[in-house]
Length: 178
Image 1 (tube, rainbow, N blue to C red):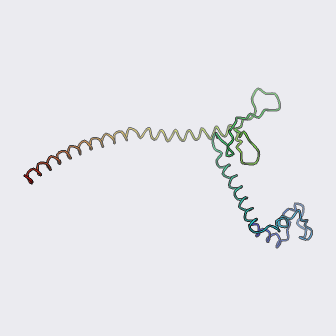
Image 2 (image 1 turned 60 degrees about the vertical axis):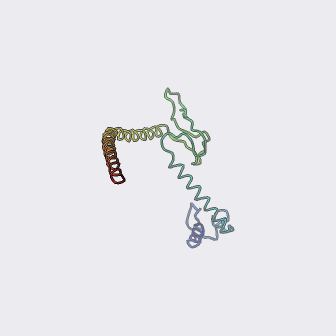
Image 3 (image 1 turned 180 degrees about the horizontal axis):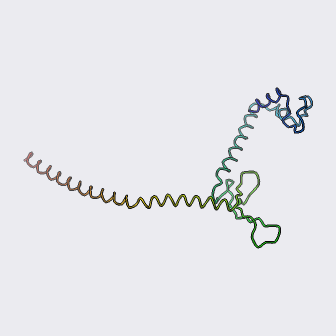
């Protein structure tokens, strides 16, 4: 991944860190500003390890972002969730904005800090969906009870048939072996 990036930069002769103009030649780049010059001495194994670490970091960030749903009870870092109220600067009778925040919160993307309103809305949606699933099960219970009663009647009927057949087998055994 990085090797292809370096080759592309050399072919285009563009400084990816230059925000002012695109008229700079490759000879004018400083060692500190050119990314590939800094990484030039890195061996392939170290570059592979570095890219793996970067991929793991990105995957962890996306996992944390995807898992933040509803009212969370624990942060991925293991910290507990506290209810934070951000105070307003001016005097007001209403409290400030409320958040569900990790106790060890840092703005690095690995900790939860979710607005209270969003968390409560998602939790209500989750509970509503669960309630609808329970309603379907509750509405299905009478049908299942009727089916159970029919099956119990069939079992009683088959038990009677088995008893009759076992009696007939006894009679036949007596006739054949006596």
